[in-house]
Every structure is written in C-alpha cells, then in structure tokens.
Image 1 (cartoon, rainbow, N blue to C red):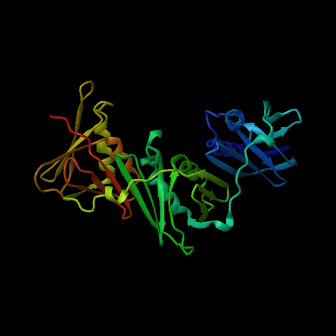
Image 2 (image 1 turned 90 degrees about the horizontal axis):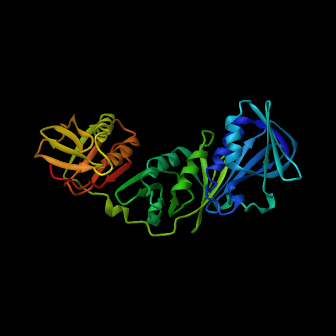
Image 3 (image 1 turned 30 degrees about the vertical axis):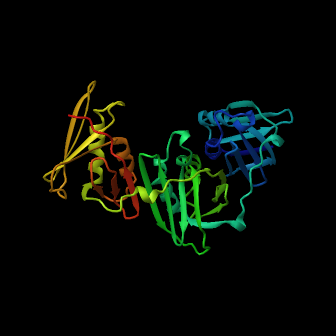
Length: 369
C-alpha cells in the first residue's frame, strides 16, 4: 500500500474514525484504524465492537492499492504536528507503516489486517431516508440530557420514535427530559421505537456533512446503521425499557412566565458563579412582575440577579433549579423567547420556545433561608 493524500483530509478521517476507537481496548487491534486504499479513494474503519465506522476520504495519488492497520492515537498525533499540506503513507511486508510529511518521516508498527474485525455492510434495500437537518436537530436538542452514569441502562441513550409523519427523539437522566419533534416524509411507513446510545449519536453528528440533504438509516431489533456520503456507521441499540416520557411532561401548568432567552441564560450563569458542588442550586423568586435569581455558598458569597417577568402578577412563587440543567436546555432553544411553565415548587418546570421542543426540569430541594 502506498498513496499520497491531503494531510488535513487524512487527519479528519482519523479524528472521526478514532472517536470510535476505545481508549481501553481489550485487544490492541481495537486501538487501531483499518486503512484500505483503492485506486481512487481510501477508507478508514474503526470499531470498539459496539460501534463501527467506515469513513471515506479522497486521495491525491495511489501508487499501490492495499491495506494496513494503523495505531489511531499515534498517527492522529503525528498528523496534528506536521505542517506540510501533503503526506505520503506506505506499508511494507515487515508490518511497518512509513509516513513522510515534508522533511519529517515516521515509522510505526502495525497490526495484521486479516485480524481486524469485520465492519458490517450497509443494507441499502432495508433503509429509509431522513432529512439531514432534521436528524441534526433531533440529536442536538436532546442528546445533552442523556444520563452520564453507566448504571442507568435505558437512560444511557435517546429514544428515536417514528410514527406516521412524525419523528421524535427523547432523552432523560431522571432529573430532566428533553424532547424534540420533527415532521418528516415517511412515505415508506417506517415505525420505530429504539434507544440509540449517546456515543452513537455523537458519531452520527460528526459525519452529517453539508453535502447530504438526505441520510439513509436502517434499523432492526439490535442495531441502527446510518449512511452518508462520507461514512457508514453501525451501532448496537440500548437494551432496556425506556421510561414513559409522556407521563413526565406536564400537560398543564398553573402559570407560564416568558423570558428573553439570552438574558435568562446570562442570569443563571451569573448566579451559578456563587454556588459550589454542595450547593449547586439557584433560587428563582417571582413576585409583582419581577423574577429574582439568587444563590449563595458559604465559601464563596452570594449573588442576586433581577429580571423582568411581566407575565407573573400573582402571589410570590419560589422554586430552585440546578443552573447547569437550565442553561443546557435554554442553549438549544431556537427562539428568542422562552416560556417556563410552573405549578408548585416541588413539581417539574416545563420549558418551551420554538414550538416542537419541550424540556422538563425537576426542581432541587430548597434549604431554609
């Protein structure tokens, strides 16, 4: 195998493929990228046995087609540090990879290609199309709410629900829930209710390039696969029962208060500066058309930020939130204004803003004072 390629194109391919590589690979070959060079292109593949990717990259010239298994992290680091626009890569029969970039040259040890796990082929006949922008919207507006703790099983992914001409994605960690709904052209009559792992969603977003108006998706009981112009990705689905998200979303709220989205983000960020990990809460008090955000920590001090809240003219209402949860939800709202639906200080708040996005946040227990 011997070819020349743009350093930037090769770096991008290894960064994307490398995002699948496990940092704690149970076998050394799983820490590598399988590079296959054809007459007119190259493909970089990687897998951790849960997620697999085949990423296409252009080449400048192919001297000899072939294949090699390249250490992902080490080659990526080399490509980052090189400054030339082009690199030349070749492999020899002794299991070594040679890379030349300008006046620099490197030699890396490689694994045997025949030992690399098989990457599944995309089943075009069983796939359906989904608008790229709508898939990006579904992912970006929900994946941040996926549970970080590995013990949460079904909470470690987002549910992709397709029924009729509607696709929705829902994610929750038990303390907040994000749901996005998109109208789709479902002429194939696809029905789905699968839990997609958070890591798979991250990799999906990396390969959803501007060149794709439509992406292809294939689903079965155990696996989801996505195909774009650049890549094919397969991932095992999360096995488990997703919570009844409809029961979590309040149907009605006692009252709703509107805010400028950017102002509210800024206010919660400011208040969060005077909290710590033990007191990670910001109190919101509503009274006489004003909202006051306050926070305090014994080792830091106190903060108070006032905002206009003309929608609330009733009795004093006080509730407290984890400021990180509020800011993360507000950041993905598309509109300039947001609405916060409230009922009681111990009941969840419902945040909306752009019609088809709903974010539900549980309050935190308030301390006296």
